[in-house]
Each structure stands twice: as structure tokens, then as C-alpha cells.
Image 1: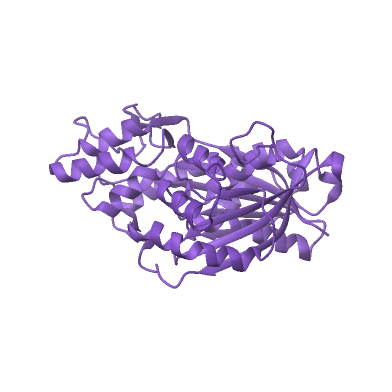
Image 2 (image 1 turned 180 degrees about the vertical axis):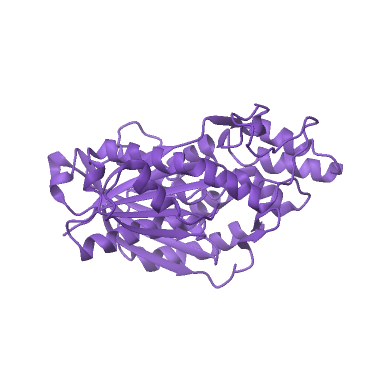
Length: 377
């Protein structure tokens, strides 16, 4: 029995920002010296990001749709410092639409009726509420009230792969299960003006977005193509516990993202991947784009071809780092037939895919998948 991802759907907020817009907003904040302004320009310009999406229309200068929405920028263009409670209220306001939008897209792509869903696995590290996103999906999508629900909260950027692993374990235990996995992250809710280099780096890459996957071992539900979930791995690096940290502060959630993170990933990635893959041959890579420098270090550490991480770089360019949802954006492109490199020939038959994501710890999460097509099944 093989568990497969039948489809992946995505959703992003309607407000789309250019990287230059966000850079200029942060660089224009009062009280910053010239050195900090130069650092902001350097970090944002080096991020290899062109656009990001946000649930906060005020970041683009637009008026919020709702008079009760949280104010984020005043008339003078100064970033405000809302309380954690106010930011979390915006999560409660905006997250359900992103969760539901991605989920509906995935279900429609798989031609799976909501009534067929047996389990829900939701993921987010950017807001907290109970009843949570798992509950809201049942109500918003009209899922059976008997659906079993699980939520992976505050796991960080690596959580998309553990969510797929949880779905695969459910399907192994219950072969007729149809699992809906949904990751939604509203990272921009926690933006703040700061002269701290770590906060500047975080502000230069993070964005909002959601992605969902339909996971099952029921072969009759397969369509034209699917991703077989072969196996998963987890590794903790020997260092990095204090270099990537996500915690709750008084004025939003606070990110520690030190300059050591790319270097630690570069030092550790070869050993982690070798232990996971062994002698397996890989045709394509889906690597979480924690930032351009992280992708550069992975490419060098694994001695990959220059085009091996093209899809990861494209998602980073077009959307930024959407935390846990990002890996599914990349896997969606591979599922739909992207080759994983520069070529236009499309995916090779029975394409083997290695997926990697990084989170606090530092944690390296891995998955090995194979893209199958109906004509070769």
C-alpha cells in the first residue's frame, strides 16, 4: 500500500507588495541611523525576492476594508507596534479564508468531495486560537463533523513535511483514509521596525500564504498524476538551538534568525542528506527557501547543478518565505510536471524528488517522493 499526494492547492492574500515597497517602508522609519538604513537596503536587495503577499492592506498604503482592522502604518508612514493580542485578532480574522481557499483548491484539483475527507491536519506558527483552524475548516468546507482533526502549531518553517508525514502515518493505519493537509502562515502580522540585524533579515524575507494537499492510499481516487510518499526523515544539527528561534513577545511573535543559520545549514546538510538518502538517486529537489543564502549553501553543500534549485528560487522570488506553506508551493510545481531545472522538457517519468525543510533546533526535515502518471501506473 502506497500513500500519495493527489493534489496541491495554494492561496495568497490579495495585497501584493514589491520587495522595493517593503524595503523603502522599513528604511524610512524614524530613528534609524545611516548604517541601519544601509543594512536594510542590503538585506532586502540581496533576498532574491520580487514580490510578497500580505493580509495587511495598510502595508501597501491601501485603506483597510474594515474599520475595525488593525492599523499598521500611520499617516506619516511610521510602522506602528500593535500588541500581540491585536495581531492575533487579525490572524483570527484573516487565516480562515486562506486555510479554506487552499483547501478548496486542493479538493477541486483532486476531484474529491468534502464529504470524502476523513482527517484534517492543519499547520500554523503565526497565530493561536481554539477552536482552531482545524475546526474552522470543518465548518467552512462542510466537512463531516466526524472528521478527525490534528493541528501542528508553532513548529516553524519545517512543519509542512511533518504534516505530510502525519498524513502518511494516518493512511498507513487506516487504508481508506482521505487526509486534508493545510498550512497557512500570516508572517507579516508580526512585522516591526527594528535596528536589530536579525529582525531586519526576518522582515526582508517573510510573507503570507497557504497551501493544501489531499493525501490518501485509495488508488481509485488517483488522477492523471500524483506524488507517492515513500519515506521521511528528521535530523537535529549539533548546533543552532539559539540561532533560529520563534517566541511570543509583548508586541507580536519575535524571530531570532542569526547570520549563522546559512552556515550551519551548509555545514550540516551533506551529512543529514546522506544519512537520509543513502544510495538513492534523486531527479529533482524541493528545498525550503529560508532565504537566498540558505539555498546557496544547500546547493554548494550537496554539490548540486546550478539549476537544481530553480523551482525553490522561483517560489522565493514570486512569494517570499511563507514558512510551513512554502515547501508545498514547490511540490505543487513538481506535481504539475515541472522538471526541477532550467529545461522546458517537463518532468522525467517516475521522477524521484527529495524535499528538505529547515526549522528551529536546527531541524532538518526530509521526504522522498516519486511522481507517477496514470499512463505508467
